[in-house]
Length: 281
Image (cartoon, rainbow, N blue to C red):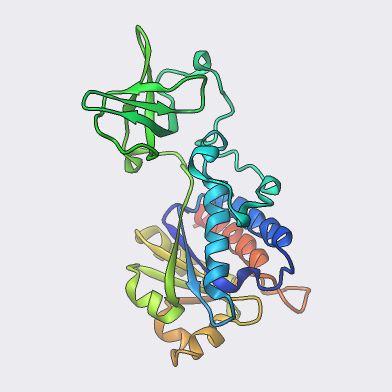
């Protein structure tokens, strides 16, 4: 599932009446995306009012959730949009450790950290214990977030590690495309584009072909519509047909018992189905 990039609309929270309920909804979605190991989230713009403000709010809340708790005070100054950040559920992903003492750090353990101080010889990194630890890497900008590997010998220090070298799930990135969906799709490289829609083909009818494409692809885009508009309508406003810009258009809840399915419900159902099918075929 790590190869899947999820695209969500800026109008995702348009039905939530206040900041608290918006925060709660984004917390739910952030948990779902992490459960299914999504590494990249992109927000495309829809035509509702305040679309830029909504996109920034969604991005801020998702980024706050993804950041390990012990780094949040350094990386996220007090902002109005984070007023209810305390109700966001913890991710409990591998990069959100609960150990907070120097003596609890394990040799070879990976930690997220923030550069506290750096000179021409070494850097000091806050990794969420009583005091910063030394990293033999010089001239890093203060406040920069990095990933390090803990080494224990005569004393504890850190070694720099590139994110692409991490094999376990290490959270997600969030970006705002700043454009409508059609224009965003033209600029984002992908091998397979999957649309989710009530009008799509039943997932069981294309399951094998879909999974084969997933296995053979390096970059997969998974698209979700908005609370009041499906992908057909969203792209139609740009004069684009859904079939012209997607490889699959699937209905992952073909026997839904409700008149509508909320975006967050569609996200959870779709990722659960794809995760299961990836093991079946």
